[in-house]
Structure formats: structure tokens, C-alpha cells
Amino acid sequence: MSDPRTTQDSIDPSTVRTASQLLAMLKQLRAQAGNPTLHELERRAAKSSPVGLPDSTTSEVLRGKRSPTLPFVLAFARACGVVSQNQLDAWEAAWKYVNNRQRSAEESSPRHTGGGTWYFPDQWRVVIVCARLPKDLHAKMPYADPEDPDYIRSYTYADLDALLEVYGHICRVNPASEVIIRTTDLVEEDDYSAHLVLLGGVDWNPVLRDSLHRLSLPIRQRSRSGESAHEGFFEVGQGEHRKEFAAVLDGQGGKRILREDVAHFFRGRSPYDPSRTLTICNGMFGRGTYGAVRTLTDPKKRNRNEDYLRRRFPRQRSFSILFRVLIVDKQTITPDWSIPENIFHAWSED
Image (spheres, rainbow, N blue to C red):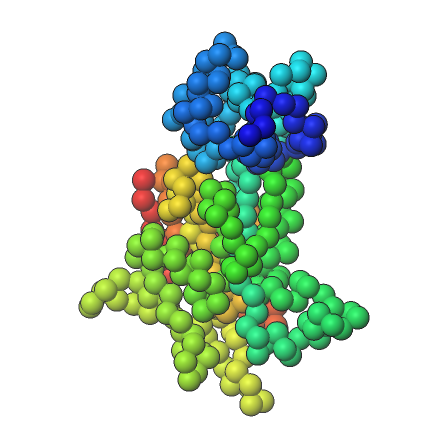
């Protein structure tokens, strides 16, 4: 068995730019050291570093539950075999870069001046999860065939308008965060420890279905699948207090034209990692999902909607809003939450 206290030449801390990259490189360092147990790391740190590595602390850091301090990073590096001062200096520089970047992002972000639901103060990794288009719809898309010279991979994503809108906005207001797009079939284990953003409805997004089940919200979305693709609805309450909220469609020229969609926005503690957030933007149709995203990205209306959230949910960490999305002349109109008739239902929990 090789000595774990060897130079880790293939690991370069100078490439670290985000907190999640720092964590990934710490895990890589441990792997190259032969994956010592937490107890072994604690034992080594007691011999090589003035700062210990309690196994409970190391476990929380490696699972993304706690941000590593500089003494932790240096002690961890020594325990994994980093002995040269130049390498230790590189790890210190990586930690300082990440933390200085986070501090700068907090000071320059809209959240620092009182706005920005899409800003994440810890600047942790953000994973946006959307569904793939079903095969029958994907087959009808131009340039969706990987063998076509003009193949465009993004055409495989459902809710593409909403995805592009929210991805660009999150990147802009979280410059120190790593923002990743996943389709539901490619979600990884570590993604559940990130800030999760789920797009789309229950029909095509199984991660969203699982999240709604775990959250036990008073709002339920009934699937559009079945003989008719237009029979889905949102449901609030139970028994005699039960209400249904469905999209409004009109017949025109042999087609069903969407006039109003119903959308749902949720923000709260993630059921997979309470130290992170879960955000849901979904609708009965794609227009509803897009409208849910645009409520807090549209430069003309987002401040008004942020004001509504601050007034309606001043201290609540978990809340949801069920609301209408108007479609006018084929255009999706950004919902205004300050107009009472636009809100079907609002819920919150401390």
C-alpha cells in the first residue's frame, strides 16, 4: 500500500473558483490518499496539525452541510499527505479566493440591498432540474436527431424558455456560485445537497413529483396524462373545502388555444438537505412554468413581486403561491402578484 503522505501532484488548488469546487477537490484529495476513514483522518491530524479534525465536523463538511474553515482545510490537506509549504500555501490561497469571492458577491448582489429571491447568500452550488421532452414530441422537433448535422442538444429539454430565463438570471445575481443544468435522468447524488430549482409539471418531472410528496403541501397538481391532454388541474384543500384550478382553453380553427394557465411557485427548505433551498416553478402547461419564473426575473415586474413576498411572507422560510398566467395574442404576460385576483391561493410555514 502506498504511503498516503506523498505529494498530490495531480491536484491543483489554484484552479478552484467556487465553494463546490473546493469541496470536490477536498474529496479528490482524500481519494488520492486512499480514502482514509474519518477516524483515521482525525488520528493523522492530531499528529500533523495544531488543529484537529473531529469526525463529526469532517463528515458535515464532506457532505456539504458545513463550510470548511481555513484551519480545517489545512489540517485536512496535511492529513491527506500534503506536506510541502508551497502546496499548503496553494490550499490557503484557494480557500481565501472562494471566501473573498463570496463576500464580494454578497456586497454587490441585489439581495444585499433588500431584493432578489433568486440570490443565494451562501453562494453554494445551484442545480436546475428540468425534464426531457418525451420521445414522441422530441421526434417532431427539427434538429433533434443526434445524427443530424444541425443537431441542437438543447432541444431535448422541456420548458426551454423557462430554463434559459432562470439560468441566466441565477448566474447574473450569483456570480460566485456554480450553476448546473440537469435533466431528471441525469441528477446525481450530490445534486440533492445543492440549492435545487425544479422546472415543469408532474407529468414529465419525477424529481418534482417526489419533492411534492415529501413537502406535503396543501396544493396538489393532477396530471394531464390520460385520454385527454387537457384535463389536469391544481387542487387545494380537501372534502367540501376542495377547490380545483384549471387552465382556460378555447376552441379556434380546430385547435385548443390556451388563454390562461395556472402556475405554482414554491420556495422553502429542501426536504433533501434542510441547509439548502428548494424552489419549484411549475404550471399546467409550459406557459405557466415560464410565467412562474418570470415573476421574479422580469425587470419590469420583479421588484413589485418581491415587495409582495416581503409583505405577505415577512419571516416565513417556506411559502407557495398558486396564481394565474394570462396569455394574450400568443404572448405570456408576466404575472403581477400585487393584483389580488391573480392569486388563487397562498400558503406559508415558519
